[in-house]
Amino acid sequence: MVRNVTRYPVEGHNSLWYIYRTVSPWKGVRNFIFIQIARYCPILPLKNWIYRRILGMKVGKHTSFALMAMVDVFFPEKITVGENSIIGYNTTILAHEYLIKEYRLGEVVIGENVLIGANTTILPGVTIGDWAVVAAGSVVHKNVAAGSFVGGNPLRELRPASSEDSSEQV
Image 1 (tube, rainbow, N blue to C red):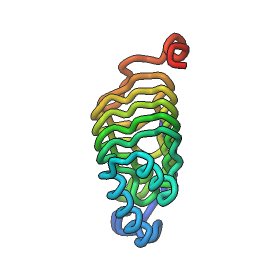
Image 2: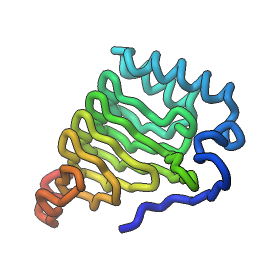
Image 3: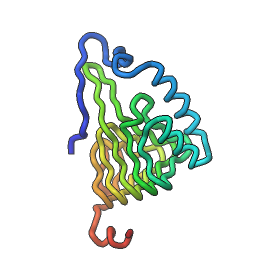
Image 4: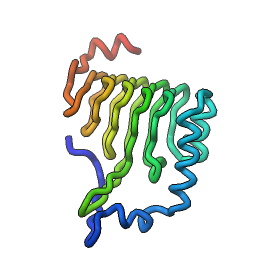
């Protein structure tokens, strides 16, 4: 269950010093401004329009990003959220990690009808399956199976998915 990230080694200073070799500073500023607007915007269709049209994210119909949700500033186009999902208050979705000797990039795929609890952090390179529930305050550092209920830090399965649950949810 290793995250699906691409690693880019750097030499010399920590990798954050090289960020503008990987992404334009103007893209960062532009994205930051629109992400801040979306974080405070109470109008869900407008918020999703910003995510889709300005930031290049893939966001399904009727998906709801709660107040203060924070998406990746530098690589929002690497984030996909399926239809009818809820991203809880103050959740952070990252598609990059800048570390000391390397930086990593990875797609984040959140399925349909997924509930992400408040104050959750989703790390790059993870997939969260359809109908999954992630408890508030979790750190999602590995893939989450469809229909399962997970939580905590480190993330653990609180209730496994069952075939019964899947048929009830359809």
